[in-house]
Image (tube, one colour):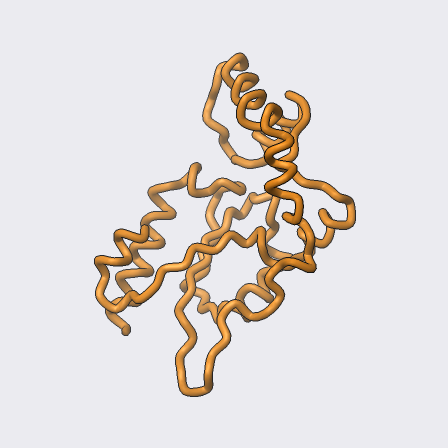
Length: 173
């Protein structure tokens, strides 16, 4: 995406944001319950997380899935615990408009692509704030038939939205 953006005249900067770092009802709820979906201690919790993260997880033989859960999550619990120690501390999250602007400048253009079936980060409870903070236009909001890892589930669709957005905005700059 960055290489493509660098090739488009008029694009000065490409910023990819993960909404997990924004203050939201989701973050506040998980901070209050001290819940973190990335800290998995057993195969059962990994299976639930795997199913939760994608609408149509790719088929994996059960032995491969167990190995993946063990080596990439359960065995790395302490590492993830350290990495995500402050992950759901809303006091550390970004709590201001993402783009501040001077009266003499135009706000940067933004694009939101969100999985309609995302159970980790829900669109509806935070959509008004995101739309206002990012100064979004309706044509720059795309809700797609996917869960949380939409870039894994629908890479062609995601790339299409991003490349179209870059091309349209390069012409308007």
